[in-house]
Every structure is written in C-alpha cells, then in structure tokens.
Amino acid sequence: MRSRWIRLTLGLYLSLVLIACSNKTPESTDTNQPGTSTTDTSKTQPAKPKVEAPTVVVPSGTVLTVRLGQALGSKISTPGQTFVATLASPVTVGGNTVIPAGANASGIVVDAKPLGKFKGAASLQLKLTSINVNGIEHNVETSALVRTTKGKGKRTATMIGGGAGLGALIGGLAGGGKGAAIGAVAGAGAGTAGTVFTGNKDVVLPAESAISFRLNQPLELK
Image (cartoon, rainbow, N blue to C red; front, side):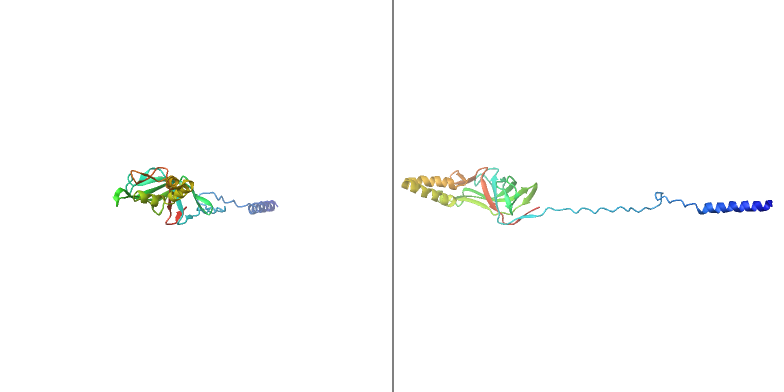
C-alpha cells in the first residue's frame, strides 16, 4: 500500500516536471551581441544631384564699350603695353544683364607709332583681351580699335568726318562763310568723341575715354 502511494506521488511529480518544461519559452536572441550581424532596415536617402548654372553665350558681334583707366596715345604708349578699363554699359542677352556695368576689363596696345615714324602719320591700335565677370576672368577676341592722323587737313576729314561737315553746314546757314568756318570748328570738336590730338597731330585717348570693341567670337559665361 505504501509502495503504491510512493509510485503515485513520484508519477505526479514527474508529470508536473514535464508540464513545466514544455511551457518554458526559449530565450530571445540578443541581436546586439558581438559577432551578430544586424540589418539596417532604414531607407538610404538618395544624393541630391548638383544643379549647374546654365551657360550664357554672348554672341559674336556684340559691342563692348569700356572706359579707359589710363591715358593712351601714339606717342605715350608702346606696342605690347597692357591697359585696364571698366565696362561703361551693361551687356544684355535676351533682355537679361549678363555682364554688369563696371566689370573690370583689360586690353593691349597692338601698335603705337608717333608722328613721323610711319610715313609722317601717327597711329594707335588697341584690342580688348579679357573681361572679369563675377570674379571669373574670361578671354575675349575683339576687333581692333584704330586711330590715325595724316596731316592737318586730312586729319580733320578722316578722324572727325561728319562732325566737321555738319558743323560747317550749321555755321553756313547761320552766317555765311564766316559762320561756316566757326561751325566747322564747333562740329570738329563735337565729332572727336573723346579723342584729343596733342603734340601736333599725335593721337591721345585720355583716361576715362569711352571706346568700343566688337566681339569677333562668341563669349561663353558660366
């Protein structure tokens, strides 16, 4: 009887042990333990593409008007000499200003011959070589600006041309022959457009003179 009771008690105990073992949950795996790889499920943000500023093309034939930063002349300048200037008026493309007034520019004296060194005439030849736009230096290819004199009478006809003729016409209408002479002098002064002749027909362009160059090739601005 006693042995039977013991067997029953032992069997009940074993049953309880088995039930407890079957209900025990497995330990969770720590994904942060060393040697355990983890997968980042967060989405990688795509890199933003760089937006480049569009290229603006100043077409060939565009006129660049600059003001000289120094005096230049057939007698005071030498071939190969560089000069500085500033843009006198803005350059626009499609109604938008692409080169502002005041932009720094530079050029070169292509040729300078004082009076008597070139068949008795004086000549000055200039070209613009670069312009600075928003801190970037751009090389430019322009037509040459040429000023020459060839004697007293021819100088007036060649360099001043229409200004003298128009002055003479106005003077003649105002007071005949004497008025024509006075008008011719006045017209000649108006026709020089900043060009001054000194030293008996040598060509001189004073500082701050406004002179114009025409682009021979398109200018790309970025």
